[in-house]
Amino acid sequence: MSDHTAGPWAAEVPPPDAYTDPDILLDPSVAFWIAETRPAGEVLAHILQTSQGDAEANARLIAAAPDLLAACRVALGPAAHFATEFDDEEPWNALRAAIAKAEGQ
Image (cartoon, rainbow, N blue to C red; front, side, top):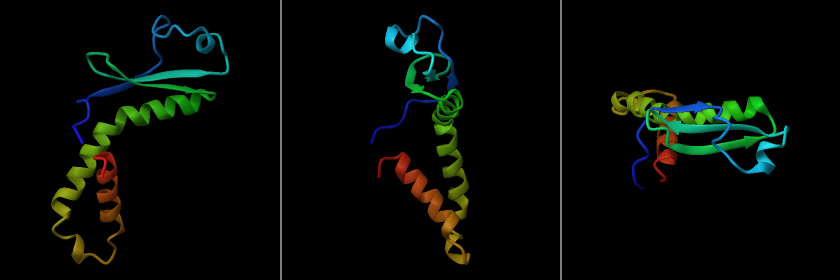
């Protein structure tokens, strides 16, 4: 798997001229958000949902993905050597699984 697009990423409602599909723009039941890179503004994902709250939450989660992956790596890094010494390996396994999922493994 190749590396992901470098962050930072952001979530926002796109400007009115960013999307030209009239079926989407004229449907009041569709909430529209985008996740994009900063500062270049390259669109990474279009989020179209019937709930404004869900669309915003999903756009923000997508935008946070590079930071979350980095945080998982940081948290697991020094702890990886000691993880077998703890009774509960579930947190370490969760971090490993999240990293593997993000890396396509």
